[in-house]
Image (cartoon, rainbow, N blue to C red):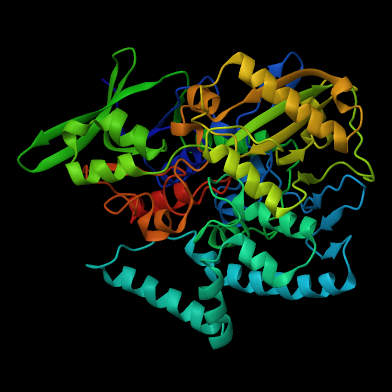
Length: 514
């Protein structure tokens, strides 16, 4: 029977980051992945002969510290210095262009107001940035180091000044609609700017306590929330993390689903001792780390019989239903969007905040939106290897597509939604549907089935105030340790959350090493 210092379950980017730090520290590490490829939702795969895409289609906040610590440039990963524009598409061609440097396509008055608005958000994001890459202490019974973290948070907020500190505390819990209405008049601008506060969530512009803290989280990277694609695409990050892990001795096993975490229970409590694979093979370890979502980890792999009922109830209550579908299009030619000259940016189809709100209303009752809201990138422009010569890949996030669809999902209902999405895209890119060789639609149910993510939720569990910071995913598991001795968690369901950031894997490794 093989024995390791650490066994990590799940080869997504957080599992890879955690494995790298532990391997670099000299531990004997085994990384186990159920799929044939590493990367989780960031894994690039062929969805039609010659055409490839990943569910996570761009990067907006992967930390320079991790790149530097793990020397990822040595393994072929290069953060792009260019960020994508966020372009709010208008049917008449009067688009809104949001860049890192400013705003165009709106009135001079709104440009001036945007400068004040974004400068304020950047100050808030900068104040919060250090705490995404740090374990958030629990409330009560803290060590000196944890008390110092609370003091550091207080000092960071105090350094903002009284006015900005009060403003941060005010806006952090605002509905996106309120913040946008306070600052802007243009419906298209408000919808475009609110997108990153909402995408990936089950909340709407008017939802209370929903999203501005999430927006500030997404602004943590060098590009202040704007997407970028590295040379070689998203896959280049996964490849670099994989090669770096191998270079420090991490053993990697793909196509090896874990059936159970081995638990020893006695009068002293419960303790993780290793894993049992689907085929019956047992592997032991001094500790086990799960990069899977909390429900999979505790309900499926640990088992209810080893957990206190109150803790198990909190895990069961985590909101994990996904609201985002993925559309991948294999195109015979490059698409054209009315009034757009360059296509290597990020396009948003959401004409007004009411359009977003009504799409959410439809999903709330288990229906697909009558008027879909969509985010689009064309990754093959940056990475030609994703498509055959002359062809292209369009990758789109479709918001407010319910996991629990009324009547359930079927091939017929998926085909109906694809038709509606193509009709919508044709309005902004005339003739696009005629260039479609193949369309792949991945509903939240498909994401759950094929990527083993409960509910098909990007973030493993909803990214909201009651499920963030020292409460993520829930107390007794919010500091990467769990009620099971020697069992840790490091996935997107941990602080700080999802997205291609790697901070959860980084933080978990630091907890274990200290």
